[in-house]
Image (cartoon, rainbow over all chains, first blue to last red; front, side):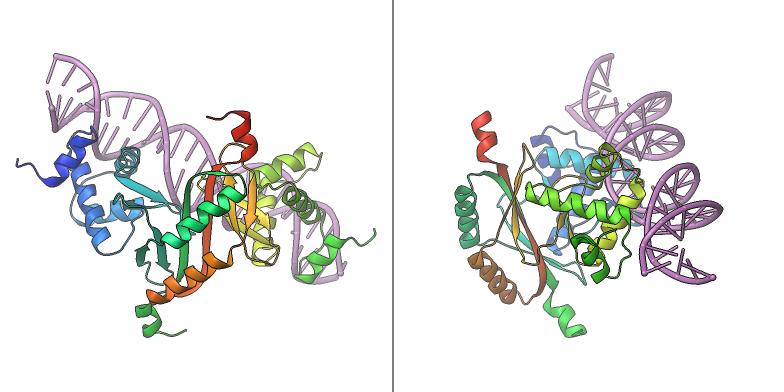
Length: 146
Length: 146
DNA sequence: CTTGTTGCAAATAATTTGCAGGCAT
DNA sequence: ATGCCTGCAAATTATTTGCAACAAG
């Protein structure tokens, strides 16, 4: 079989190239293009719908491995299910639409800098942070201005 | 029995004054003074240690009722267990120590304003946000500068 | 070959719910 | 009295793990 882009990514982080891993990686890339973050269940269901016979446990295992390998980030949004997003390398924060779940990434130097200052003021050495902003996106607002 | 401060808070939000509710409210107030946020299990254990015979299910139920009543806020930090904090009325964000779990509250107008601007730029009408900053607090850093 | 991987089922962990008895108002 | 509350056990939901069969390097 020809060597695809995904195969390289997997090999690079020391994971064998298997069908579940390649498929899940593809799904995550597709989702990222659509500004969606997927839950493990989402991934599982999409694989099912695509005719793949991949168990939910495998989905969880693969996502965790991807996370450990730095390929993926896990977010605990307000909801009770975690969502996974492809790690793009550049840090960013998120705007999440409460209606359609669209996710918009942004990065603001000013906010980042203030965070650092505030941490220092309180004597904290910062390791990371998470900033999630929740609201209604323009499309959803237009659809029903409730 | 004399009417305490807690009793008033409970009545105000339409909840009957019962022992579990009063005790849990007291615990949350105490924890807040100590810059701690408690998980449901934490609350349960402390009640047990104090000799109270209150079930874990009740703890969850009461915390949820408090949340619905606006007395308490539930946070989904990095961990898999949610933590609860007394609602002080004024919005604030959090610095969380990864070693000792100390929580420091802060509020920064500059960050708040930038968030609003960013949301507008992306066409989002913001409803709320959560900003958690994780790191090592000064005491823990002094104790072992890992 | 040899070890990492997978699917399935069973196990955990956090939280919720049904129900019969109790307590606040 | 009467309906809100509670404890306990059972149910749910999200996620993890054990294990035998299987496949990648």
